[in-house]
Image (cartoon, rainbow over all chains, first blue to last red):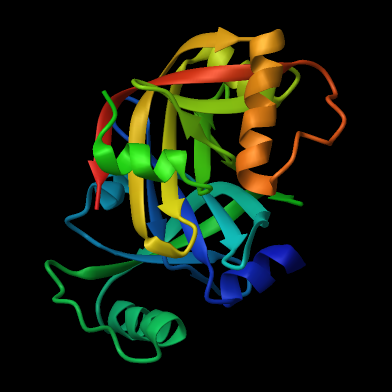
Length: 127
Length: 127
């Protein structure tokens, strides 16, 4: 289950720092859109991205989400990618995210294939 | 040398996601104040913090800095903590950071000892 503050921040139009692990263990961090379901943090990326290759090799990720109006209010979720979903569900998901952040469907060209990363939390740090 | 966009974001009153590595390799991410000198990203923390223990054991860190007014403008710096500085210089540094972000000297109680993390970049990703 997601902590209430985690859910509130992930449901809002806030941003997340998603960190994956490079093959040598060095962290890789990108600022991303974020969402959630009942039990998971959801990130949508493309299958040709380094971050996706990283989680295929090592599913451990950490997500920090902050209030876009107050970065002092943030949560950290350490966890694992427990499922990846491509196909129509991933396209629906990127359009849902786009509507949350931009008010409209996703416009940029899709370079490879969209994929949802379902992240199960092992530790949730709130403040 | 820092990339120009990295320097601009680190010099402004923007926030950084600092990621260190836990003993088992899982990333730990906190949202932090950030600064820089000519060649390094500077982070100020305390010596009792998990993130400091992490960099003592493994100096590899990654810092993402975004424009506080536009999170789509961000940089990623993958690097290593090459020096740590405690004592008066670390107190000066936290007051300098505090003035940048709050307009005044650092007020919260210092629980252990302030320490500057000097981070040398190995890879700078800008967008």
